[in-house]
Image 1 (cartoon, helix red, strand yellow):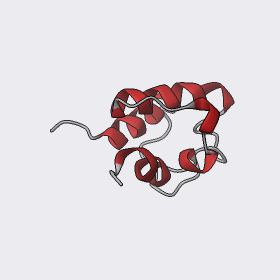
Image 2 (cartoon, helix red, strand yellow):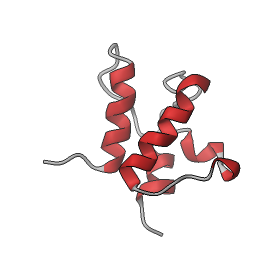
Image 3 (cartoon, helix red, strand yellow):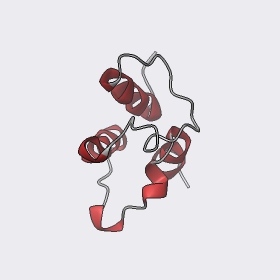
Image 4 (cartoon, rainbow, N blue to C red):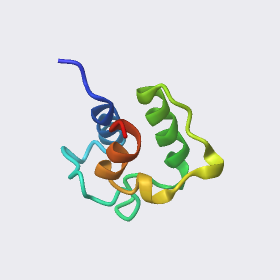
Length: 79
């Protein structure tokens, strides 16, 4: 079974944190340092690659990146 877009994001984060097996959809990725300032730009590129849509860095809302649920809602669920 092919991974969904949000699964690609989850797997990317888990690869960076081998001590973790799972990430709860509502876990704050920034507060828990699963995504920090150095990896944030990479996260944006992972989302862009998974969606095929470019994200405008000038209009980023950090709320859209705080949890997997927020990422899924902002970038993977069609409005």
